[in-house]
Image (cartoon, rainbow, N blue to C red; front, side, top):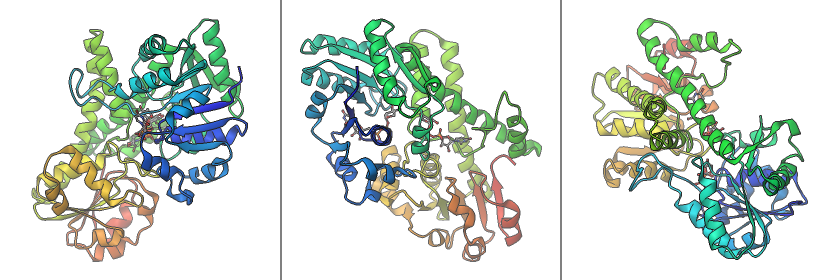
Length: 463
Ligand code: UDX
Ligand code: UDX
């Protein structure tokens, strides 16, 4: 079967960029991205492509090439579903905040709603593709709902997890290490797999398109994120040991990263990993393991999260301790709020937790981030519900200018590795700060020797 029309439910950080790239690479396939959130769809349709809701290097160009040609953003979900032969589900699957599995299990409420809507609307056979990261065996839930509530049409369920990283989404989509497609291992399933393979094969070499059974594919996505996060927690755990032993974490990372069995990637010590996936997916893995009674397996992976929480707290505590054990009323400038550079996404960003800890000690936090809107910082802090939004409003200021953010501060903390931070006029920042002027480099991106020669007291991670 040849795919002619694709629908994607969910116009977020994954659905938006993924569909834009599919539309760019397959001009003969009509791609419609739908979302319940009208404001988000309106933003994707904004005349000015620089105002689309997701910031990713290169994405505006891709959208401007394909939008209106074969890429459409719409709120008419029913119509897009009915028209399509292939439907991607790319809605959010956050960690449950209530009931059984609270704090660990994935909340599949939106996935189920999508399945029911697809079943209700569809009048022709469809291939349904799980794009969101889902717990292993979710496809069986989807199948159950689709088969028992549908209009008698046939559904094939595929798992095609997304491995793009934010900030490099377009690059990752255009030249992926691999594309993973899982499906039923019977004749119908294999046909469905082949239909999706032929979409990606337009630009991805065949040998990079891996096909598996649907359960392996679902579990591989959770596992990939768990392994990546584990590397960050592993190097972060050693960063603390380095600080006690005069070893230097950058040197250690380089030394072990040159071992080809280990490799250089994902060995950057940091203030802690963030983002929408790592924590959610590991918690989910822990929950699944525990639900099968696999206590040791669950504990093993949970430690990755415990280590990450520790790293964020440790960074905040180091600031407090260095500033003579009190930050009450002291201005601390945050450079960066996003969970990593080149994205405007702040979900689970380490900055949120470090700020929260400092605010608990009554610090004044001044935030500058090149891409995160001011309002988002308050939304993130209010979401924690540690204190009232009035208090957050009083204790936290947002700046559009990094030099203003740092003016009169006791300390500067680098929370995100934005490239521009490296090129600031640090002498000018130093001159306008209180002395001694401290810098806490949570990303190890600044030139320590240069800063020390200006007069800063510098505290990197892991040395
Ligand atoms: C999603 C999944 O959450 C994650 O599990 C997966 O690993 C990657 O894809 P992301 O695209 O980053 O993540 O989420 P988000 O930016 O929140 O986008 C989801 C969109 O789905 C939102 O715009 C939301 O409005 C929309 N949505 C949600 C629907 O259109 N319908 C729903 O029923 C629920
Ligand atoms: C991740 C996976 O990489 C991607 O394949 C998956 O599909 C979604 O989740 P993403 O969350 O966008 O992507 O970002 P990633 O680049 O993996 O970084 C995650 C976090 O780890 C960030 O906060 C980052 O700053 C941190 N990190 C990463 C480190 O602290 N050190 C490193 O060496 C690498």
